[in-house]
Image (cartoon, rainbow, N blue to C red):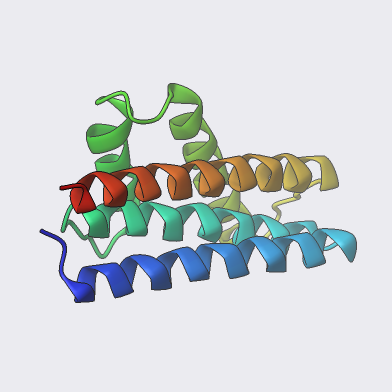
Length: 138
């Protein structure tokens, strides 16, 4: 049974994901590819944290969250392999953009990362809604 604390945490993580998507869209409109990739990745990351909260799992590391997503949701068939690929690519690109001094992020890369992040977050929301509905069913 899901506690109210877990429900609140899931809502909070989805809100973070949605806000990050909005920020990424604004940054792309302003031709700011590097921070747009950061926000698009974080949208996906927060969505993953919402999924993990549903299963009462957590980790303090990005790589740990990604590994748990792959193990618990991709390998189990909840999400297709594309979702794992998108998440890994966004993580790698965000990491390069944030930490490599000579990193160049193109507008095309930022736009594709955002497109994937929008699909990713929307599908996570659908899966969460279905899981919550199942739990609430009599």
